[in-house]
Length: 248
Image (cartoon, rainbow, N blue to C red; front, side):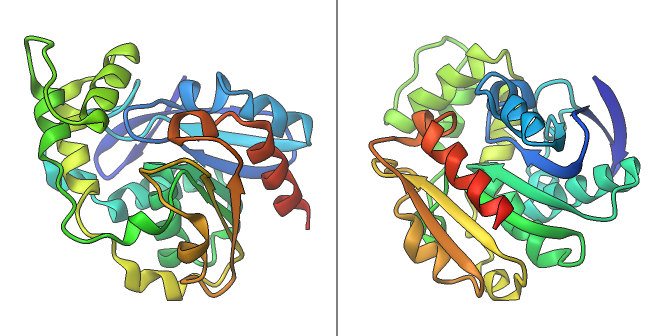
């Protein structure tokens, strides 16, 4: 892993391949390796002639892990994406994020319109626009020291995922509390680049892709058949839809 500085934090990154750049932003409690390498995404993109830029987001993997909820705003994490591009001397790139990374990608596309060409926001849908989302079950599950997780399916899933990936659960708790705040949906109309929203057909966490895409001026949607939130990320149909979008 290599490292760059952003907002006073030391963040880890990796670059593979040659060609037109694409930046990948992983989901909550994941890492660049789990989200993009293990799923075959980095290999597929390299084979298509791409330079693939991946980082471990703040609070995750090999990157610094602040414990203040205020350090995990979507705007701050979008700034990390641009700081990495600056570090590498990349004036522009395509951008793809999954789940939390999809949220970060939409914010980055809105705030830095001159830095991105095509944007894919996957693992998110109409539920992104829900208000007053409750983070308490997941936060409690992440902070539970006895390993006994109470709460709903999401709380149990994220605790298990965090432990599988050997994450710092206190940092993740701060991150989750921040990203569950109301999404700044007024930013959607400021996105001037083509955006593809992708969600699994049975992804209850994301909801349908179409209604979210309809809020974006140049938005389109793709639904991955018969896939939920966890199984969408490595699905061949998702990959095929993205490859088509990137070459249109």
